[in-house]
Amino acid sequence: GSGVCYGMMGDNLPPANEVVSLYKSNDIMRMRIYNPDQAALQALGISGIELILGVLHQDLQGLATNASTAQQWVQSNVLNFWPSVKIKHVVVGNEINPVGSSSEFAQYVLPAIQNIYQAIRAQGLQDLIKVTTAIDMTLLGNSYPPSQSYFRTDVRSYLDPIIGYLVYANAPLLANVLPYFSYSDNPIDISLSYALFNSTNVVVWDGQYGYQNLFDAMLDAVHVAIDNTGIGYVEVVVSEWGWPNS
Image 1 (cartoon, helix red, strand yellow):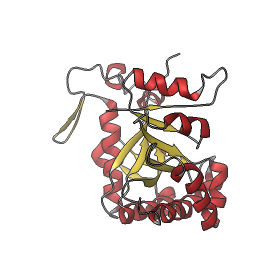
Image 2 (cartoon, helix red, strand yellow; image 1 turned 90 degrees about the vertical axis):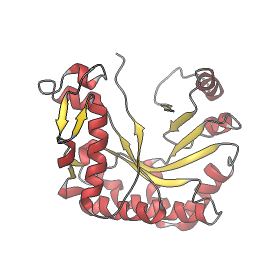
Image 3 (cartoon, helix red, strand yellow; image 1 turned 120 degrees about the horizontal axis):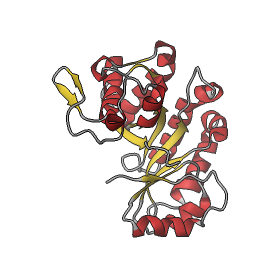
C-alpha cells in the first residue's frame, strides 16, 4: 500500500492526533514526516502506521561529527517511541545536492547515516529500522530513455559512497519521484495523459519495455542509474511523489 507525506510547513494545521485519525479513517497505513516532531510521534503510538522519519538538515553536522549526538538523537526520536511507533526508515537528508543550494550539508550525510546506523545497530534493530537518505531526480544526468540513465558525474563522489554504504547495510535508497516537474519542465515532449497515469496504451517504448506512464519510467531510471555505478544492488523506495492540487 502507499503512504502520504505529512508536511508541517503551514498555518492552521490540525493537531497531530487528528491527522493520525484522518490517516486511519482513510486506511492510509504509511506516513512520512520530515522532522522528529514529538507530537506526531506521540500521536502515532499503537496506530499501526509505518513511519518514514526525517532528520532536520541543521542537525546533520552534529550527528555526523559526534557519535554520542547520534546516540542521543536515536534515543529521543526512535527508541523512546519504538516499538509502539513502527519506524521503518530514518531519512538522513532530503534532496541534498552536493552542487546545489543544499551543498553545505552534503559532506555530513554519509557520516550522519553511519553514526545513526551504529546507534540503531547497538540496539539490534538494524534489520527493522533502515537508515538512508532521499534523493531527487536532478541528480540524474539522463533519465530518458530509462535504460540510458546515469547519475551526473559531478554528484558521483557524493553519491557513490552512500550507495556503497546502503549495499553494506542492506538499506534502500529513497527517491522523490515527481512526474509533475518533469512534465512542467517539458510539456512539449511529455503528454499530460502520460504524466497523469491516464494513458491506456504504451506511450514510450524502451527496447522491450513499454511505459504507459511517466512515473514508472522515472522510477526505472533511478534503478538503472544505480546499476550503472557498478557498486551493487540497492532497492529503491519512493519517498515522495505527487501533483499540485492548486
